[in-house]
Image (tube, rainbow, N blue to C red):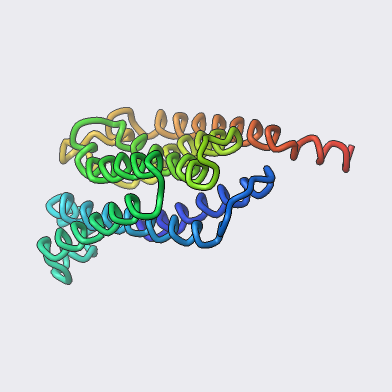
Length: 231
C-alpha cells in the first residue's frame, strides 16, 4: 500500500503539470524541472516510508496486516532503515536548496517536517489522516510555485481535492485496523469514532473533493467547453 501511495503522489504531480499546461503557463525547460520535482518527491516519500517502518515496528509486529513488513520479519534492521531515512532526507534537502527557489525550498522543509512527524501522530490525535492529506495537498502548491513562482488558482483547487480525497481514503484504509488500534490505544479516526461514522466522514470528504474538482474545472473553463460542445 505504501508504494501505491507513492504512485498516487506521482499522479498528483503529473496532474498538476498537465493543468499548468492547460492554463497556458510557460516555463523554460519544463521537463527538466518536472524531473527534479519527481526525484525530490520520491526522496521525501522514501524518507517517510523508512521512518514509518522504524517508528511503528513494535505495533507492526503484533498486527496481522503489517506483521509481514520488512522490520518485523527481520529482513531489515531498524538501524538500516533509520540510516536510509537520514540519507534520503539529506538528499531531499539538497535538492530543495540547490534546484528550487526559496518558496519551494521552504515548502520542502515543511513537508519533510510533516512527514517526519506523521509516524507519531496516530499516538496523539485522529488528525493523523489529515496529515497524510496535507502532505499530498502540498504537491500542487509546490508544482505551482516551482513552475510559475506564484500560486495558480486551478492548482489551489487541486490542492483541496488532494487534501479531502486522500484524507478520506486514509480513513477508509484505517478501518482495517480499527479493533487493533483501540486495543493498542492508538488514535485513528475509526478507533475514536467507530466504523459507521468513519464511513460517513470519508463520504463527506470525497463529496467536498468533488466540489473542488468542479471548481477547478470551472477555473480552467473546461466546464464551459463541455457545455458548448455537448449542450
